[in-house]
Image (cartoon, rainbow, N blue to C red):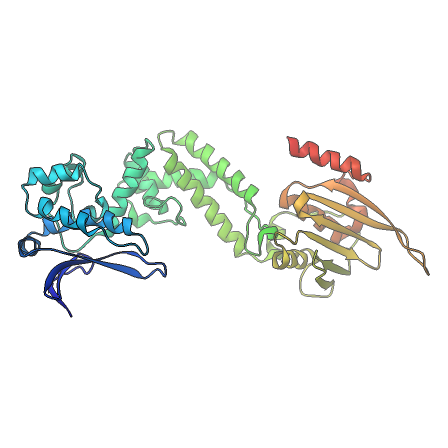
Length: 420
């Protein structure tokens, strides 16, 4: 039988229960192997209960000191009750100076105290009892997160001035640098907002006209890492030139915002529209393009495309790649059976082969092919070659050389590039 003897408004602050006639402190902390919250208890005395009832600050200090012991218990271990009981008297009953001394010797959970209103300056001077003079039962989790973010930056030697802070708040990166950035003008003090917007305008002007294309080699919604890196470098260089006082955290947050917005635009743009945005591609041979093509992957999966369909050949092919590409499926082929030509993309080797039929097989004779290779520079290089082929066939690829017919020579070229 378990009875609640004392509890506070916030359900996470430890409660006092009576179990089998014995007073115990009960708290939830950590999680078990199934990610369910763990509950710990250990015995206390009536004198301890009296302080817990009347003194919120001491109650919170005890909680802060016990939490590391709960962490030590892990997902299935037992709480070290002797260590927990040994903290009761020194924290709940001792003079403030002794409590401060105890906290200089033990591990304790700072975030709990900060969330419940601790004076951060006093905490950092080791005056934990005085720091809790204005403690509150209701926690402010954001206050604890901001304190943690500030201390994490301080460990790296980064100190923010008001503009740095305002930029990070505007982009939503003040608490977590890995969170998805967004524009939050309401999070910035009105007096600083015009200066923040000047920083953002600098970034927008620097990357105007740049785009981050899709990279279907890594999935249907994946984007081109090279495009991202180019936009990031361009944005950061411009912001640093125009606003040299900004710390790296603030500069990176602005480039992260620009790149994320460009990525969203790319993901929300139909493939056909995205190809138009990349610029027209000419067919020097004057061909009106292919009328029927077959796409295959390394798993012998096939998709047909015809000119009278609703989508362009390039869009349909890259959609096929986005659906099928994986770590063990990195070779894709486009074939024009009627013309006896095709291209094969080797994503694992950053290369492409163009294949033309020299002699069609008749009877028992095997057909003969000419195979030529070239290195490819990123997804944009693949896109250019695919577009050229579907518009003008192997003849349209001639200007995109050099093409290497000798396999050994091509392998040497690959190794030379890999060594750079």
